[in-house]
Length: 355
Image (cartoon, rainbow, N blue to C red; front, side, top):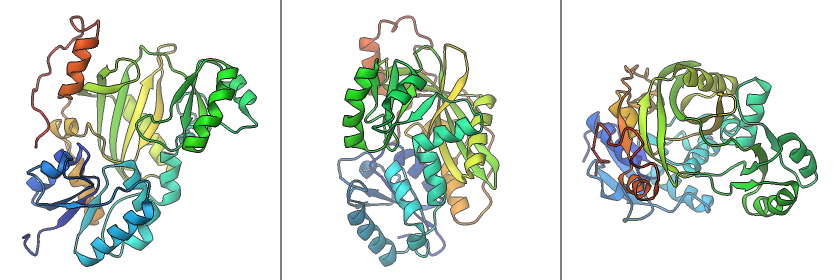
């Protein structure tokens, strides 16, 4: 059992792969870590870095069932801090924060601020209003499809405003395809927007930030170097890099929407004009967070410190670490015609995610 002075940190979405390096970091800092997992078959349930695991309902789609479980848990047991690993639990904490904060500490923006960042259409509108580089976007409604097509052009991308992992994204090549696909996507995923399709060829950059009182405490940048599948797939080989320009863009976005705490950005370089453009904000810890840790920046400690009202530690970012998802990278090697041309072929570090 934990000592009286040891802080207890509850990690939500313990089934996610990023829960493992988060639990490891917190364990090394002396925290008592507890993971909520929806199945014993998950990554997190098997990690040795968690002091305890609890089986919980999924946070989506039955939010009410999850809320009843979670509220009962934090009322019955004493937890000091909780950290979400997923979009749905981050949104849950933001929406129910007034009811939850008397029982547990966490750092999450107010719901209106949260949705201004999480809602992909709202984010694009903020970028347009503040002249921040972004893909052209147009709010989709059934009576404005012709107007959207005229403004965006083709090919274009239908994107649900609230989704994770590119679910519901659909490429359309004509106004006829748009009129056929848009109602189907909106029926299944809710409100959507139409966005210009950025052709492949530019760099994809991920930025992690921890911001407090409008000031950046820590920031890291990651170059997504390989994907599987190669077109539109998940990154399987990444490298931490210096990218002050990307960090500056993302910092401006967070200041404009008054976001506090941790945020994760995806940006794409448009090969047509060479401009790096904001694509979305992920309001939680990403799967690639381990490369930030190996590059010297401990966002987990920052989140706990800020949640407890303590000053967040400033770290020295040391880029150059590689992160490989071995299974996906092996598939990339088997399928890619560039497998003997791409550099680097081998990462500097062969360490896998800790179990």
